Amino acid sequence: MLTQEQITAANKANLETLAQLSRKAFDGIEKLMELNLQVAKTLMQENVEHLQDSSKAKDIKEYMSMQANFVQPMTEKAIAYSKHFYSIANDTQSGINEVSKADIQKLSTQMQKSMKDISSQTPNNSDAMVNLIKQAVANASTAFESSQKAVKQAIDMSTHQTQSAAESALKASDKLFKNTVVK
Image (cartoon, rainbow, N blue to C red; front, side, top):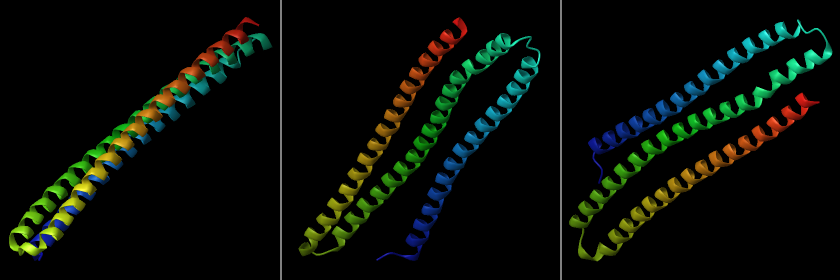
C-alpha cells in the first residue's frame, strides 16, 4: 500500500526529527560544559587568592576566621550552580519534548489521513478493522500526552525539591557560620 515516495518521505522526516533531537541534546551538553568550565575557572582563581591571603595570617585565630569566611559562601555557590544546572537540564528536556510532541502530532495526523484513505477504499465489512486502528492511534496519542505531562510534573517536583533542599542547606550554613564566628 505504501509507495516508494511515501517511504522516502517518511525516512527523510525521521532523519530530520533525529537531527533536531540531536541538536537539542548537544545544545544542552554545550551549556553544561560551559557552566562547568566557568565554575572550574572561578574555583581555581578563588582558591589561589585564598591561599595567598591565608599565608598572610598572623595567628591561628585569624587563619580560622579566614577559613570560615572562605567556606561560608561555598554553600550559596553550590546552590546557584545547582539551580543553573537544573535550569539547563529543564530547558533541554523541554526542547526535546517539543520536538517529540510535534513529531507525534504530525505522525498522528498522517495516520488519521491514512485511515480515511483506507476506509474510503475498503468494503463496508472492514469498518470494524478501520475503527479499531483509529482507536489504537487515538490511544497512542493519549498515552504520549499523558507521559509528557508526567515528565513535566516530575521535572517540576524535582526542581522544587532541589530548591527547598538548597534553601535549608543555606539556612543551616548561615547558622553554623554565625556560631563559628561568634565563638
